[in-house]
Image 1 (cartoon, rainbow, N blue to C red):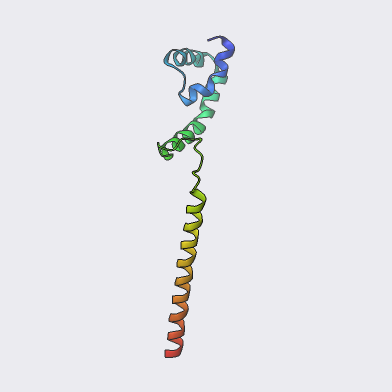
Image 2: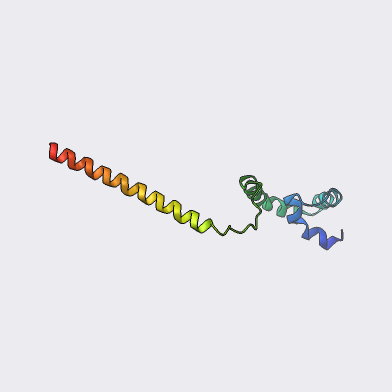
Amino acid sequence: MRSLERHRDVGAYALGVLDEADAFRFEDHLTECPRCAAQVTEFGPTARQLLLYRRATPRFVHPTAQPGPRLLERLAGEVTRRRRAGRRRTLFALAACAVLAVGG
């Protein structure tokens, strides 16, 4: 690793994607370069967020996966079912109010 490349490897080191030899060389560089050490510290929160994202994403979903052809139909069907259930609840509530009003 040449000296200019060492400065460019800050992000890769922070994400843990360098191989063992390059990581070892970069750690040696970190002891001598306060600028890179500060940048590694700055990458910490980003690396943690990416790790949390990776853990939250199901393993069977590829990051660039495309939706299936029937996804829109299933979503529209689900919205329709939920709206119908909401309308039914509203009608039952109105009927209950009418019964209470007539009975009272």
